[in-house]
Image (tube, rainbow, N blue to C red; front, top):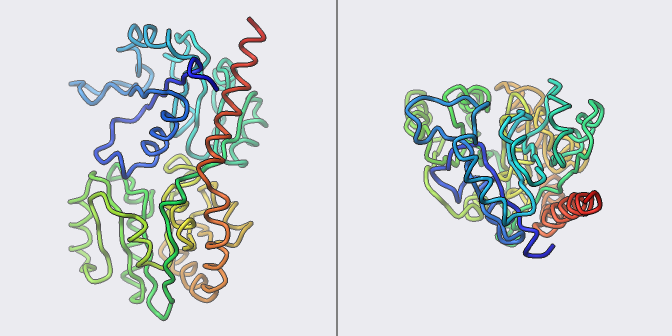
Amino acid sequence: MHQQDRVLYHLTVLPPKLPACEAISQEMNILRAHFYGDVIYLNPNQGSPLPMPRLLFGFHQLKALHQRELTYALHHIYNADPFPYPVLRYLRRPVVYMIDSGIGLNKPDVRFFNSLAAVTVYDTRSQERLQRWGVRNVYRIQPGIDTERFTHTPQPLEGEVHLLVGSAPWTKAQFETKGVNALLAAVQQYKDLKLTFLWRGVLAQEMLSRVKRLGLEAQVKVINRQVDVNQELANVHASITLAAKPSLVKAYPHSLLDSLAAGKPVLVSQAIPMADYVTATKCGMVIDTVTPNDIIAAIKKLASCYSVTSAIAKEIGKKDFSLEKTVISFRNAYQAILSTKNHKE
């Protein structure tokens, strides 16, 4: 792609408190560098005295968007679920919609999504579901990270199991839906389990209070600052990410990709699309439901075959999730959209 084919990225979340710890912000910085892009936050609620509904996101800056898009070839919006933002209908350049979490069982507004230039997803499960519903122009993007940041530090598993937990909650309700409550309950029942939570500046005091109230300070560590994730991974046996439904986390959570790049196995709940990859490659364990019993059962199963599972993680992590593959996937999608647009013109 040439510099005149610049991409303007749109985020529907509020600007994160710790951008370097947040997966979408990391990916956005990489894409901006490759596709001469910039980022706009469509969510007006950071400075709004009254909460604005999602239906109105972006309208407060529509005039500025029309001005900005004169120097861009494409719009690319990132959002966790397939919500039909009305403002996208008023943009004059082709719109690509990235659904960065997994697609659930609720059928989206197919007509709305077919009015866009393309829809992008990270996983085959979501791609096939959208296509069955009649959504056209669905592109699968190969998820990836900067794998060169990670090195493998073996950690023999001898009794005690130490897990790294990413994808911290944004709301109090997500303590339940992202499995934090279940993990803390599992620690209470399983005395050989230790957890290190990587937090990102939101509800940190709430988490620390829960750990203290349950008397789990010896088994649970909460890190609420930017850290060297490679260094933290060196001290654990595996990583875990849980979600009760696919829209809560990225389809391929960066914390789990980081873990595989460091040669550490992963545990993931069935609702997250990456579970299909984990099942196929045997690089970790899939947890059927987000309950203490299922979590403990999966951890014990991982411990029983840890040497084999960690060897698989070390073999595939850097190879399957390279940043280069992600950039190529985006470039191929953008070029296909732009060539179709130019052909029509």
